Length: 557
Image 1: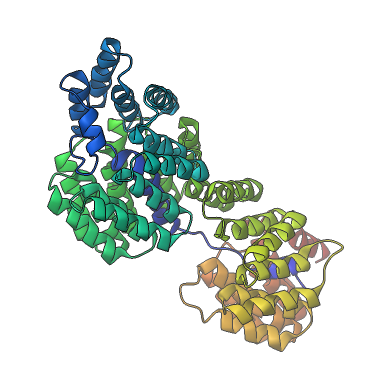
Image 2 (image 1 turned 60 degrees about the horizontal axis):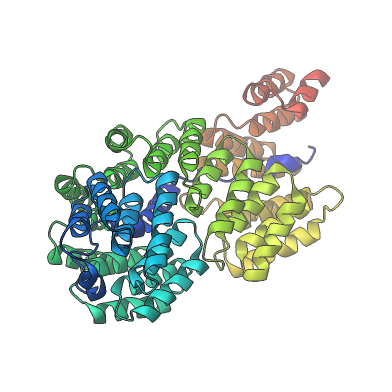
């Protein structure tokens, strides 16, 4: 039997677990800027004495009260009237900026106007720490974490007791992977005012990002104890419970959040994500549609809908991409997890070039530059696209950051199995061995089995492929590929009974996988059964009409 190089390469599974990662990203960006910031501004700031002193009776103070009650349009109107009465009222400009940014309808125009008002407030009062904190939050919206950090330091220099400055600084450091530094800033904030509810929501978010869900739950409950009507704390508490598969507890918290604030779209979105996790797709869609009623142009809702179409029982990847594109058109272009989700959707429809580009975009906007995950995914997608130079470059970029990366070594090894004029099986084996020495993985053994097969080391190939199949939770297509490769190895050993058994296992794992049908056709030619061979080649072409080797085999019968 001819060796089938395209027959043995391990295929990646459809990844449904990304649904949870996208929620964390949404909670991060929108949590800091809308969900958390929008409810606890000035009238409830235990630690912001400076802002309280500046506020006077009248329109500006009424505007902040309206913000606390989520009446964004009313607040904007009040702040605008305050500015008409006194165009040097810096707090009115900051208040109006917040009414723009915290509004669930927060589109690009709102963000631009929020930025303009913030700059005007700083022109009027360059010592107003709150204005610099808010400017930092605007930079965070654009993933400009370095600039955001500079603004926070300015705020602290002007008011070393500005609690929000330390909370924003902690968030920035969390996103940059600086865990210890972030926790020091949360401790400073707690020293300033241990009864400030936002402190516990922000630190809870930090713990969620660090996968410390018990600590997050404790902090969210503390926020609720301090303010029983803190709807955002209920929503995030529900999310943390969901991460622990405590779905009933999660739903209870989302329903409390919605009861307190029915116009809270993100509570519906988080609720919908929980339902997706449970496989209750129709109910999840209902929740996303509730969010859509509140604001048809709300970017996180668009992403939630995209996740629904990506994860439902019969995925609709083009539809999911359509919703992801809507989100970026609205202005949601600075979230790295968003790009990775869209990349996965592109990958599932075979558009590996677009997938690679989106993974690179995710790596570019991700503030944690030590995180090589998206570069590895980009290397894989470039490999699948056939751009082996870029796959090679991205994998080496990963190794420059993390020399022990098992995944980077796997893809470097695989590049040397496919790259025209650079095929080097010995070098491929060396890289995959490095990967397995670092971490034993399904892909490591499956791909080393592929290399051994192409080196003619059939027993070693069978051994590694059998070991790969011992991994738990291996997607069916991956099982099919590995079973088929064992079939190919036994065929080359002229052990046709074993070969047939493994090809049958490959078909049982994925009946639409064309290659085992082709291999069975080859086996039955060897066994002298031309009719069966013709039938199997026909089945190979049924599931892959462009299978040139199957066409040629039928033509030769």
